Length: 203
Image (cartoon, rainbow, N blue to C red; front, side):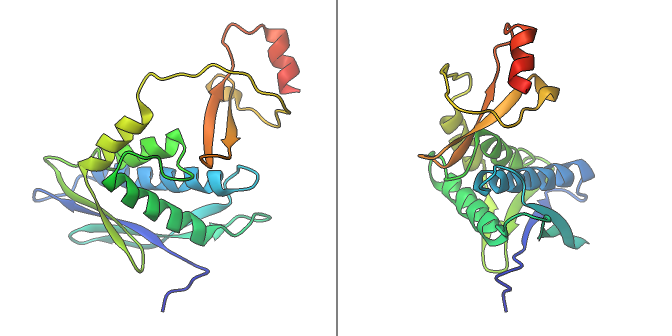
């Protein structure tokens, strides 16, 4: 029986040769985790992470398997089922076409693309699965993400409203929620902006 309140999602990596390199498995697992976190933020009413991911099962037979279970953060809404379903639907859609899935930010798309970056000489197959579905991830995901992102595209614009929080660790970046595509857009301040203006914005 599937627990609707406690969904799980996992990744299965099959090696091409006699051994699976730790870096390949960890890369695929980390990119799935980043994808889950990005979709979590996009689904959240406050654009924050609502869940942390615990290890439910870890197996190093052949293939290597990591099964994760979401744990709701204190004071946050329970989006666990929506996060898992949205990620699975989005990965499946990226296998078939180059249309941005709902709630997939640029960062989420990049994580989906990197999910298949390990495929090649050492890794034969990467599979994402839940209790009721499985998706074999192929190079089609990377190709479709490249079409969606169109590297180098930038849009300059203005916004009207209140800035609630910023992250200065990566050069004063912040996110905007775009309701039409239901996605988060990463923005950055003009590096030539004077220090006094930045201080006012931070306040």
